[in-house]
Image (cartoon, rainbow, N blue to C red):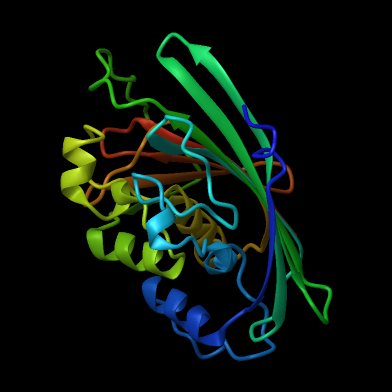
Length: 275
């Protein structure tokens, strides 16, 4: 591995835009009356501040721009989100000036029975320039070789039993809006022909960050709780125009969440800490 890749670092000044915040509310079909300058940004809505500014000529072959720090190719053309951790140490205020710092914290290549892979951790900090608001996020990506085809043995379906469940069907419009707000041009979310013919997936893939946001919104809006930290592990993709089931159970100072696909196959698990 090129040791200059690990530790690659970028900083950028930005604004926690009221206009972008209102667009997120519209995407989530929520009223925006309280989303004025000076109001706290709802938990998880900071994703638009992590969008990469990678020039189109410098994008990976899959279109992924990176989040703050462009990712190297390494001869591994496929990219999947493996997990993320978010800690809110004080809500960002809408309209505030933000300093973003992003770096590749870890990049490890290894051989597996399925071929060579690389695991990449991108750490980002969003901090108010003139205030206490601060969010730290670590995203873990898996970089993989060309798609080998569908797995021979599908995972087993689960019987969903939880204190709270909610069924949502993300569609192409929702995927587009989320990708556009986060400036994420990864083709598996936008280009159906690419997803099917190149990555050999059955349909467009729901953004891992979008799935996470839909869960935290269920906790925030439907259950009236106030998330301040999450840890997410993604184990299987979700696809556009197919239902996903959010299952939530109380756990310590918050909720344990699971996301299931239309066949009740586990797609992701989350631990959510609340105030």
